[in-house]
Image (cartoon, rainbow, N blue to C red; front, side, top):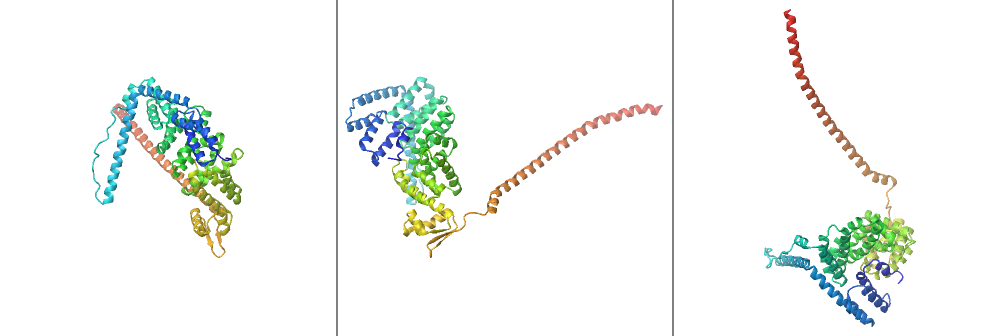
Length: 493
């Protein structure tokens, strides 16, 4: 397929993370089935998911004897590593049981509250029949009994568990490993990557979102700039899973991540095709953002699209360029029609199709209204594919959301647009209003500082005068006595 990005994205992914994308290609029949099955078999051969690989190999008529031997070898190695880390695995199992008991207790309490609310009775203050049992092994005890050899075995156990598809267990091992090795930055960074990928493959989106920020901090403090550049590119590709598959409301966090200068530089340098996902995230979040914030994000997007247009382009980016740079609305509508097929066949964007099309129509409408005064409603509805029976309601809502000053002329079937821009005097006043207020605050602050300094100076001067007065009083008395003493003989004479 012309605009399929699976190959480019998979070059930044682990073999386990490629499998969902390959399965999606098979569901949408974008490539011949035998080609997809062969690609799946080759990917599975790089993992430890032997049972899955054996089923695919048998369907293709391939020999599975090597896979069976590999499975037996992996199982033996897992058993050996589990025995080496038995004390740590006991601690992890106790923590897991305690967490499950706490969750069960919380659910029971919520059910009791809901039942009491539904019946109109007072909420009962009951205690659970079985209180959660706290772990008898603490992390401190584990750290005391852990040797460097045990830590190495735990790391290998986590890695091997991930390879065989036990993602939740691998995450638990890596979490404890990170706590026990706080000063080994290289292995802690590797463990953080493993935790994020385990959460993604376990569909644990809440934890995966929380894994992003600590990993960003570790990338910024480890390695050379070139290494950091590629690690940011890896993080961006994993963020596609986290922010696009976890719910529509999380795409704003993807925008915040990519508009960071370091990550935007990584996109432009290594993977400009990611601009497709940035464009969709910004457009679909339009209704949730204030107009000035949306405009700032859009300005950055348009600038980068124009800069990288010679490297990568697709109908989604061409739609942005046609609507906001060329102001060619016919071309924008043509590109929007092509976008429907691309988004429907994109693993990460498939859930945003309707929202993107609706928001894109609104973007075309707003841009068109900004440069025209009289707009024919029939022409507008035809261009934007708006049903005639609901056209007036859609137009009124779009005008209200955009805060335009306009009216619908039903007699001529037109939209009358009034000036949306302030005159030069008004623009200068609006821009300098904050400057004037800030100037007053600075003057007030300077005056207060001067008053405070003057008060401090007066107090110091008074203190010095008092000290000088005290110092001169004592010698004066002595001088009088001496004068009197010397004056007496003169009088006698």
